[in-house]
Amino acid sequence: MVSFFIALVALVFGYIFYGKVVEKLIRPTNHRTPAFSHADGVDYIPLPEWKVFMIQFLNIAGTGPIFGAIMGAQFGPASYLWIVFGCIFAGAVHDYLCGMLSLRHNGVGVPELVGTYLGITPKKIMLAFSVFLLLMVGTVFVYSPAIILGEKMGGDTQMVMIWCLIIFLYYIIATMLPIDKIIGRIYPIFAVSLMFMAVALCFVLIKRMPVIPEVWDGLDNMKPSAGPIFPCLFITIACGALSGFHATQSPLMARCLKHEKQGRPVFYGAMIAEGIVALIWAAVSSYFFYGGAAEELGASLKSSAPQVVTLVSEGWLGTLGGILAMLGVVAAPITSGDTAFRSARLIISEFINLDQKKLVNRFIISIPLFLIALGLLWFNIEDENGFNIIWNYFGWANQSLATIVLWTETVYLVKHRKFFYITLIPAMFMTAVTVSFLLLSPIAFGFDKIIAYIIGALAVVTATGWFCHWYRKNS
Image 1 (cartoon, rainbow, N blue to C red):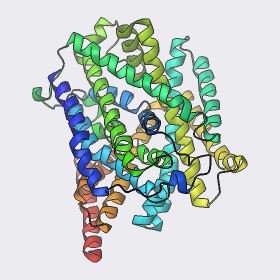
Image 2 (image 1 turned 180 degrees about the vertical axis):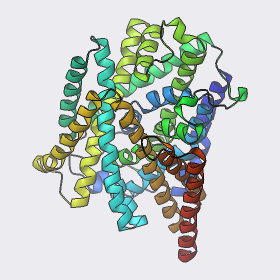
Image 3 (image 1 turned 90 degrees about the vertical axis):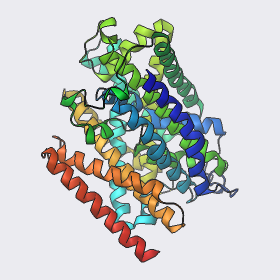
Image 4 (image 1 turned 30 degrees about the vertical axis):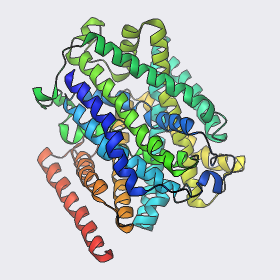
């Protein structure tokens, strides 16, 4: 448990000190924000800072810092290091800069930002990539809460499908309505539930003080069947450390901020809060798999992530606590799913220049998205391994998008003569991770580990060489 406490303190200090360093690079101004200059009553609406923080936190959380941390913790205590260093030096920086860039470019989405700094071809690639990722998110975040709710009511496929349809209908409504009608009103409540769950579980850990693997016990892979720690750990734990999905969500809140100084608590702060949630679940999972909690709860060590959530919430927090905790775990993915579809709608509308004030224009873009998502959802249900397949593709696409955004932010910092190494180093590292995973993973090429590592290293050298050439040319 000592490693857990050190990691928890490190995240808090990361926000206080490193967050301030990153903020000084941007130098927030008093200029009018898009919430006022582009107010449309649908997506551009000024909201209170506390509400924007809660929405951002819930948007980026989903099941990522929970399910990802549960699966990632099985690798061993190396998961603590990735959550802490990834969150402070990569994920929170990525989210903050993306949100602030959107804020200073009239609230545009990530493809437009990529096009501005990397060019028209990367913009088109990012458009397809981000929409693909958002559809994956919408599908995963329909199915994972439906599984939890279905298990609570019988556990058969029919019940899961009923919940999938109910959640999907909610997605349609939330995607169409102005952001302050549903999202602005109920998200803060669900965010509190998610925070309660994390805090309650943290108190349970403190009370029990279980003996679980520590960082100094060694960083060996404790679950080789999940793949090598590099790059698989860095794909498995995404939302709790670094996530490209956040780049699609930060512009949503950039359209609602009243002034630029709110950027650090909303963007950097929400990512640190998510890292804390992931850290708590990593410790809980370590206790479950390696500290004897599974036996205490009468569970199998092969329990899936949704099963672990259900067993732990009910077994440790009692009836009322279990209900509130489950509300947070179920609501978080649902609320991330609806904003995923909302982001996809806005990204496409910007690309084809279709105004979104009219309801009919929102339907024109959203209907094809919902139909594709329904097809993915059907595959998810029919194929018993469908969830794992889609999750793996989601994980790789998620981190690949984050990599592209980190390169974009690096170019921005160079052009504005700022210290660009804070994004260059994470961009280089994640280039190696995403390329190696694509080559190594059985869902893609399935190459030998050494070959995957060599090609991944070559990809980093190539990308860095391109950047150095561009830098010399433009400096």
